[in-house]
Image 1 (cartoon, rainbow, N blue to C red):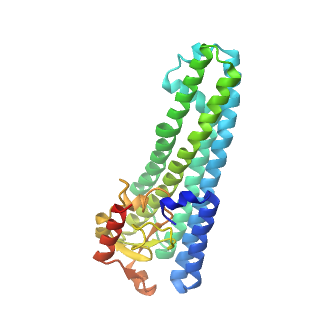
Image 2: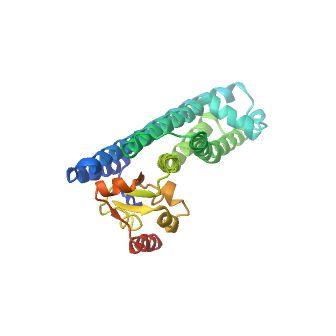
Length: 302
Protein backbone atom coordinates (compact mmCIF):
# COMPACT_ATOMS: atom_id res chain seq x y z
CA UNK A 1 0.00 0.00 0.00
CA UNK A 2 1.57 3.24 -1.06
CA UNK A 3 -0.83 6.01 -1.89
CA UNK A 4 -2.44 9.21 -0.64
CA UNK A 5 -5.67 7.17 -0.56
CA UNK A 6 -4.23 5.56 2.55
CA UNK A 7 -5.52 8.62 4.40
CA UNK A 8 -9.06 7.45 3.77
CA UNK A 9 -8.35 4.39 5.91
CA UNK A 10 -7.57 4.28 9.60
CA UNK A 11 -3.92 3.59 10.42
CA UNK A 12 -4.73 0.10 11.70
CA UNK A 13 -6.82 -0.75 8.62
CA UNK A 14 -4.07 0.46 6.29
CA UNK A 15 -1.46 -1.56 8.18
CA UNK A 16 -3.56 -4.72 8.14
CA UNK A 17 -4.22 -4.34 4.43
CA UNK A 18 -0.54 -3.89 3.62
CA UNK A 19 0.45 -7.02 5.54
CA UNK A 20 -2.49 -8.96 4.10
CA UNK A 21 -1.43 -8.13 0.54
CA UNK A 22 2.08 -9.43 1.17
CA UNK A 23 0.72 -12.59 2.80
CA UNK A 24 -1.46 -13.11 -0.27
CA UNK A 25 1.63 -12.90 -2.49
CA UNK A 26 3.37 -15.41 -0.23
CA UNK A 27 0.71 -18.07 -0.89
CA UNK A 28 1.71 -18.15 -4.55
CA UNK A 29 5.44 -18.33 -3.89
CA UNK A 30 7.89 -21.06 -2.96
CA UNK A 31 11.57 -21.57 -2.30
CA UNK A 32 13.93 -18.67 -1.71
CA UNK A 33 11.45 -16.08 -3.02
CA UNK A 34 8.95 -17.17 -0.37
CA UNK A 35 11.63 -16.90 2.31
CA UNK A 36 12.39 -13.35 1.22
CA UNK A 37 8.72 -12.38 1.30
CA UNK A 38 8.41 -13.82 4.82
CA UNK A 39 11.36 -11.68 5.89
CA UNK A 40 9.83 -8.57 4.28
CA UNK A 41 6.55 -9.25 6.10
CA UNK A 42 8.50 -9.37 9.36
CA UNK A 43 10.22 -6.11 8.43
CA UNK A 44 6.88 -4.46 7.70
CA UNK A 45 5.40 -5.70 10.97
CA UNK A 46 8.43 -4.35 12.83
CA UNK A 47 7.92 -0.99 11.14
CA UNK A 48 4.20 -0.98 11.93
CA UNK A 49 4.90 -1.83 15.57
CA UNK A 50 7.46 0.98 15.71
CA UNK A 51 4.87 3.44 14.45
CA UNK A 52 2.38 2.19 17.04
CA UNK A 53 4.93 2.52 19.83
CA UNK A 54 5.83 6.05 18.74
CA UNK A 55 2.18 7.11 18.68
CA UNK A 56 1.71 5.80 22.21
CA UNK A 57 4.95 7.40 23.36
CA UNK A 58 4.06 10.83 21.95
CA UNK A 59 0.67 10.73 23.61
CA UNK A 60 2.25 9.76 26.93
CA UNK A 61 4.91 12.48 26.60
CA UNK A 62 2.30 15.11 25.76
CA UNK A 63 0.23 14.29 28.82
CA UNK A 64 3.27 14.19 31.10
CA UNK A 65 4.67 17.45 29.77
CA UNK A 66 1.44 19.46 30.01
CA UNK A 67 0.91 18.17 33.56
CA UNK A 68 4.46 19.08 34.58
CA UNK A 69 4.36 22.44 32.81
CA UNK A 70 1.23 23.39 34.72
CA UNK A 71 3.04 22.66 38.00
CA UNK A 72 6.02 24.73 36.85
CA UNK A 73 3.98 27.82 35.95
CA UNK A 74 2.09 27.55 39.23
CA UNK A 75 5.41 27.86 41.06
CA UNK A 76 7.03 30.44 38.78
CA UNK A 77 6.12 33.71 37.12
CA UNK A 78 5.22 32.87 33.48
CA UNK A 79 7.11 35.99 32.41
CA UNK A 80 10.36 34.56 33.85
CA UNK A 81 9.90 31.37 31.81
CA UNK A 82 9.56 33.46 28.67
CA UNK A 83 13.16 34.59 29.17
CA UNK A 84 14.43 31.05 28.53
CA UNK A 85 16.41 30.75 25.29
CA UNK A 86 15.58 28.03 22.77
CA UNK A 87 18.16 25.59 24.08
CA UNK A 88 16.90 25.94 27.66
CA UNK A 89 13.30 25.60 26.46
CA UNK A 90 14.24 22.44 24.56
CA UNK A 91 15.85 21.05 27.68
CA UNK A 92 12.76 21.83 29.74
CA UNK A 93 10.54 20.12 27.16
CA UNK A 94 12.72 17.02 27.10
CA UNK A 95 13.31 16.77 30.85
CA UNK A 96 9.64 17.12 31.72
CA UNK A 97 8.06 14.81 29.15
CA UNK A 98 9.56 14.22 25.73
CA UNK A 99 12.91 12.55 26.49
CA UNK A 100 11.02 9.24 26.67
CA UNK A 101 9.81 9.68 23.09
CA UNK A 102 13.37 10.30 21.88
CA UNK A 103 14.53 7.11 23.62
CA UNK A 104 11.59 5.19 22.12
CA UNK A 105 12.45 6.31 18.60
CA UNK A 106 16.07 5.23 19.03
CA UNK A 107 15.00 1.84 20.41
CA UNK A 108 12.57 1.24 17.54
CA UNK A 109 15.21 2.30 15.00
CA UNK A 110 17.52 -0.38 16.35
CA UNK A 111 14.80 -3.02 16.00
CA UNK A 112 14.19 -1.95 12.40
CA UNK A 113 17.91 -2.22 11.70
CA UNK A 114 17.98 -5.77 13.06
CA UNK A 115 14.97 -6.79 10.93
CA UNK A 116 16.65 -5.35 7.83
CA UNK A 117 19.88 -7.20 8.58
CA UNK A 118 17.96 -10.46 9.06
CA UNK A 119 16.46 -10.05 5.58
CA UNK A 120 19.88 -9.36 4.12
CA UNK A 121 21.26 -12.57 5.63
CA UNK A 122 19.04 -14.51 3.22
CA UNK A 123 20.89 -12.95 0.32
CA UNK A 124 24.36 -12.98 1.85
CA UNK A 125 24.76 -15.11 5.02
CA UNK A 126 28.36 -13.90 5.44
CA UNK A 127 27.47 -10.20 5.37
CA UNK A 128 29.63 -7.96 7.57
CA UNK A 129 29.85 -4.19 7.99
CA UNK A 130 33.07 -2.18 7.99
CA UNK A 131 33.54 0.94 10.12
CA UNK A 132 32.47 3.25 7.30
CA UNK A 133 29.12 1.48 6.87
CA UNK A 134 28.54 1.37 10.63
CA UNK A 135 29.15 5.13 10.77
CA UNK A 136 26.63 5.67 7.95
CA UNK A 137 23.98 3.61 9.77
CA UNK A 138 24.60 5.48 13.04
CA UNK A 139 24.55 8.83 11.23
CA UNK A 140 21.25 7.92 9.55
CA UNK A 141 19.68 7.19 12.92
CA UNK A 142 20.99 10.48 14.34
CA UNK A 143 19.76 12.41 11.30
CA UNK A 144 16.29 10.87 11.54
CA UNK A 145 16.11 11.66 15.27
CA UNK A 146 17.21 15.25 14.72
CA UNK A 147 14.81 15.80 11.84
CA UNK A 148 11.89 14.58 13.92
CA UNK A 149 12.66 16.18 17.26
CA UNK A 150 15.03 19.10 16.64
CA UNK A 151 13.41 20.28 13.41
CA UNK A 152 9.77 19.26 13.82
CA UNK A 153 8.51 18.40 17.29
CA UNK A 154 10.52 20.62 19.66
CA UNK A 155 10.09 23.88 17.68
CA UNK A 156 6.32 23.34 17.53
CA UNK A 157 6.14 22.52 21.23
CA UNK A 158 8.27 25.49 22.24
CA UNK A 159 6.25 27.87 20.10
CA UNK A 160 3.06 26.61 21.74
CA UNK A 161 4.53 26.91 25.22
CA UNK A 162 5.64 30.50 24.62
CA UNK A 163 2.21 31.39 23.26
CA UNK A 164 0.57 29.90 26.36
CA UNK A 165 2.98 31.75 28.67
CA UNK A 166 2.26 35.05 26.94
CA UNK A 167 -1.47 34.41 27.41
CA UNK A 168 -0.91 33.77 31.13
CA UNK A 169 0.98 37.06 31.52
CA UNK A 170 -2.12 38.73 30.07
CA UNK A 171 -4.21 37.19 32.86
CA UNK A 172 -5.68 34.33 30.85
CA UNK A 173 -6.44 31.65 33.50
CA UNK A 174 -3.78 28.93 33.71
CA UNK A 175 -6.31 26.13 33.17
CA UNK A 176 -7.65 27.80 30.03
CA UNK A 177 -4.19 28.46 28.60
CA UNK A 178 -3.06 24.91 29.38
CA UNK A 179 -6.20 23.43 27.83
CA UNK A 180 -5.57 25.33 24.59
CA UNK A 181 -1.94 24.26 24.65
CA UNK A 182 -2.83 20.59 25.09
CA UNK A 183 -5.27 20.78 22.16
CA UNK A 184 -2.68 22.38 19.88
CA UNK A 185 -0.17 19.67 20.84
CA UNK A 186 -2.70 16.94 20.07
CA UNK A 187 -3.53 18.42 16.67
CA UNK A 188 0.17 18.75 15.82
CA UNK A 189 0.76 15.07 16.58
CA UNK A 190 -1.05 13.99 13.40
CA UNK A 191 1.50 15.74 11.20
CA UNK A 192 4.32 14.65 13.45
CA UNK A 193 3.29 11.01 13.19
CA UNK A 194 3.23 11.20 9.38
CA UNK A 195 6.80 12.49 9.44
CA UNK A 196 7.82 9.92 12.07
CA UNK A 197 6.36 7.07 10.01
CA UNK A 198 8.18 8.35 6.93
CA UNK A 199 11.47 8.61 8.83
CA UNK A 200 11.02 5.11 10.27
CA UNK A 201 10.52 3.65 6.78
CA UNK A 202 13.34 5.79 5.38
CA UNK A 203 15.71 4.57 8.08
CA UNK A 204 14.90 0.96 7.18
CA UNK A 205 15.68 1.67 3.54
CA UNK A 206 18.92 3.40 4.56
CA UNK A 207 19.96 0.22 6.36
CA UNK A 208 19.12 -1.70 3.19
CA UNK A 209 21.24 0.68 1.10
CA UNK A 210 24.13 0.23 3.54
CA UNK A 211 23.73 -3.55 3.27
CA UNK A 212 23.93 -3.30 -0.52
CA UNK A 213 27.04 -1.15 -0.23
CA UNK A 214 28.66 -3.61 2.20
CA UNK A 215 27.98 -6.53 -0.12
CA UNK A 216 28.78 -4.65 -3.33
CA UNK A 217 25.27 -5.33 -4.68
CA UNK A 218 23.90 -3.26 -7.56
CA UNK A 219 20.45 -4.81 -8.00
CA UNK A 220 17.37 -4.14 -5.86
CA UNK A 221 14.04 -5.95 -5.72
CA UNK A 222 11.07 -3.67 -5.04
CA UNK A 223 8.72 -5.50 -2.69
CA UNK A 224 5.35 -4.67 -1.18
CA UNK A 225 1.59 -4.61 -1.81
CA UNK A 226 0.17 -4.40 -5.32
CA UNK A 227 -3.46 -3.31 -5.07
CA UNK A 228 -5.89 -0.57 -6.00
CA UNK A 229 -4.25 1.88 -3.60
CA UNK A 230 -0.72 1.45 -4.92
CA UNK A 231 0.79 4.67 -6.28
CA UNK A 232 1.15 4.92 -10.03
CA UNK A 233 4.85 5.43 -9.37
CA UNK A 234 5.19 2.17 -7.44
CA UNK A 235 2.91 -0.07 -9.47
CA UNK A 236 5.26 -0.65 -12.47
CA UNK A 237 8.12 -1.49 -10.09
CA UNK A 238 6.53 -3.92 -7.62
CA UNK A 239 8.19 -7.35 -7.73
CA UNK A 240 10.74 -6.10 -10.28
CA UNK A 241 14.51 -5.89 -9.96
CA UNK A 242 15.94 -2.41 -10.49
CA UNK A 243 19.63 -1.77 -11.19
CA UNK A 244 21.55 1.02 -9.46
CA UNK A 245 21.65 2.91 -12.76
CA UNK A 246 17.87 2.63 -13.12
CA UNK A 247 17.43 3.68 -9.49
CA UNK A 248 19.31 6.88 -10.26
CA UNK A 249 16.81 7.65 -13.03
CA UNK A 250 13.72 7.21 -10.81
CA UNK A 251 11.84 10.24 -9.48
CA UNK A 252 8.88 9.81 -7.10
CA UNK A 253 7.79 13.41 -7.64
CA UNK A 254 7.98 14.27 -3.93
CA UNK A 255 11.52 15.56 -3.70
CA UNK A 256 12.56 12.48 -1.70
CA UNK A 257 15.34 10.05 -2.62
CA UNK A 258 13.79 6.89 -4.08
CA UNK A 259 16.50 4.67 -2.58
CA UNK A 260 15.59 5.72 0.98
CA UNK A 261 11.98 6.89 0.52
CA UNK A 262 10.49 4.57 -2.11
CA UNK A 263 7.32 6.13 -3.45
CA UNK A 264 7.40 8.87 -0.81
CA UNK A 265 5.24 9.65 2.20
CA UNK A 266 3.21 6.72 3.59
CA UNK A 267 4.96 4.28 1.23
CA UNK A 268 4.83 0.63 2.36
CA UNK A 269 7.21 -0.66 -0.29
CA UNK A 270 10.87 -1.44 0.28
CA UNK A 271 14.05 -2.38 -1.53
CA UNK A 272 15.89 -5.67 -1.12
CA UNK A 273 19.45 -5.84 -2.50
CA UNK A 274 19.85 -9.07 -4.49
CA UNK A 275 22.62 -10.94 -6.29
CA UNK A 276 22.54 -12.17 -9.87
CA UNK A 277 22.37 -15.70 -8.48
CA UNK A 278 19.36 -14.84 -6.34
CA UNK A 279 17.64 -13.20 -9.32
CA UNK A 280 18.05 -16.39 -11.33
CA UNK A 281 17.16 -18.78 -8.48
CA UNK A 282 14.01 -16.85 -7.62
CA UNK A 283 13.17 -16.28 -11.29
CA UNK A 284 12.79 -12.54 -10.79
CA UNK A 285 11.98 -10.09 -13.57
CA UNK A 286 14.29 -7.16 -14.21
CA UNK A 287 12.67 -3.77 -14.73
CA UNK A 288 12.82 -2.46 -18.28
CA UNK A 289 13.39 1.11 -19.39
CA UNK A 290 9.65 1.22 -20.08
CA UNK A 291 8.95 0.29 -16.43
CA UNK A 292 11.19 3.12 -15.22
CA UNK A 293 9.48 5.60 -17.55
CA UNK A 294 6.03 4.39 -16.48
CA UNK A 295 6.95 4.89 -12.81
CA UNK A 296 8.21 8.41 -13.43
CA UNK A 297 5.16 9.27 -15.52
CA UNK A 298 2.93 7.93 -12.75
CA UNK A 299 4.63 10.22 -10.24
CA UNK A 300 3.99 13.21 -12.49
CA UNK A 301 0.26 12.44 -12.67
CA UNK A 302 -0.21 12.48 -8.90
